[in-house]
Image (cartoon, rainbow, N blue to C red; front, side, top):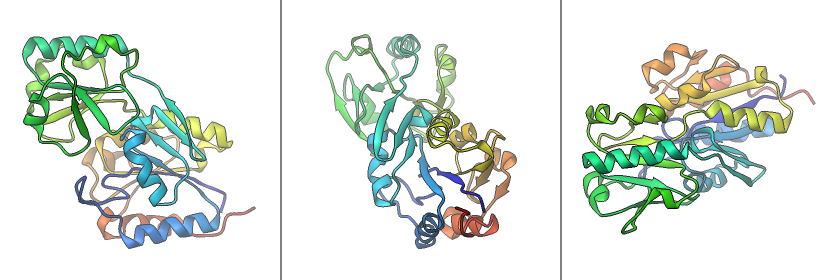
Length: 262
């Protein structure tokens, strides 16, 4: 077995349950430990901001991570930063939200907190995914870098936003959309170049629509049994659901527990 470079999504892949009430199955923890013991390289690949994922990284024994939907990179516990979204496009989207009355928030730093100009966003979403801080008079033009934008609305109201298609976005919650990077393959390539690995030796594990960005055909893609149909359709392997030993079974099937040749 050649050394493999394994990248794992968090929500719905490593962890089961909703944010705030999640757990990592024992079989997944066992699989990760065995993968390390035989010599593979392990990293997280998540849409979460680095600040919202770093505790998971440490808890599960990872030292490298693709975060922020692919635009954030951590290697050997060193956070190398986050590539921001297109600033002009974000400002245009916020301006349109103001015009049409949609509550909004922005993330302008690597933290667990997003900023919003008033209490409407929090009242609308009742969201616990991350903290929300009210900044009266909030103006996105005052911040040189914007990493994420959230817009509170029910489907299909987002279709009214003419500026939205200029930015990557996805809906994970019924109350609001996430405007955030969706190119996990970008971060994977950054880490791969640093480590000197080959695309053929990469295996990615995911479940959501945003994981389509790392199921590129360049490497092996494993979709969890609970994955979106779109992801299963392009996966090289569909394993059991995350809560039913999915990661462990996939690693067995791919022979990943075999010792790596030194």
